[in-house]
Image 1: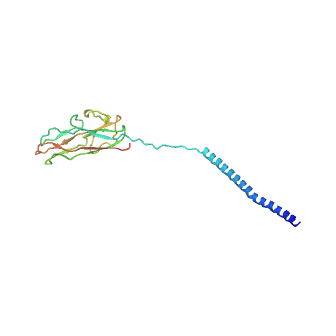
Image 2: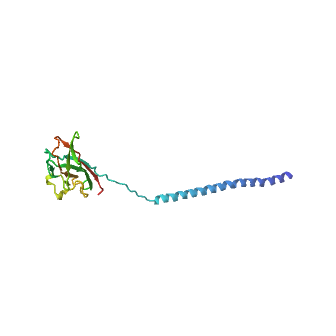
Image 3: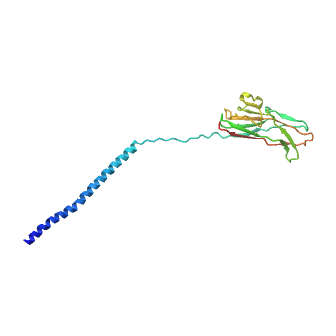
Length: 208
């Protein structure tokens, strides 16, 4: 009898033990299921946000204008000069006026500046001959005409070479020309020989 009673007492303890070990397994399944549900909801929300998003884009653009180029097409030539006798050349002298040809972006505003010498000199520097540029010794033409046909309708005539027109532009054909005259005043004791000096035309776009 003592043995039977002990057996009955141990059986409930075994059932309780099995129940206590089963509860945590059920809890883990619940937690795992809950985590999966939250993960699925999160994915669905994120997908909804992505699908509802929109975007656009723009480009940065810039157009580089045609580069400026300046060519000394013709030298300012006074030809043969007598000692003590001044000699001048007009900007519209076909064979003797200085001609600069400018090419660039059609109709674009440009700034012009002439660097003019005060005298011509022999190559060995032993003598100089003064040169003078008058207030109307230059012209700016926006066509390809020859000097003798330069007209106000083509650009600017009778201009001061030290102060060329601020409204100058590259012609509609992509070309503008600058014409220049001047005068040399040799002394009565001027040495014979060939006299030279540099005339420089500087050109730049001014953004107009």
